[in-house]
Length: 165
Image (cartoon, rainbow, N blue to C red; front, side):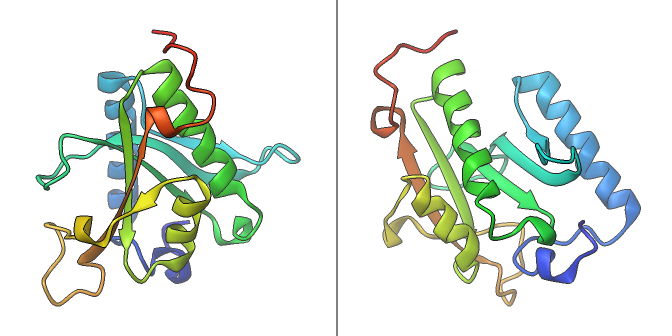
């Protein structure tokens, strides 16, 4: 999946098997440490691997950190089916109801219209004043400028119930 140029167009590349394996190892460690990560997603119909969706602690300094972000990375064959939105909602629900997080953020390249649309569908809000330059990307890289979206637990439907912690 990470070798697909269309999928990786708006993401930092994982150019080798070793870097992809390191990404998976990072997810396993994050799950062990924090109780959440980017989880593997399967299609209900076939059990085929569709990608990864979940929550991560933002691990770089920015004006909005400390924070937890929701994110997705889906195989191109799964695009346009609402899977990112559906799985993103489940990740947000877990973050708000199970973890009791007060806010969850999401960010993507300002050019990544597909992900920005998913963020909006999830009810996240965007203030252009929150946009930032991703510190791990070269200044000349078009992925450097990131749009930040936010969602507070109080604005999430169904959060009248207290967290299940």
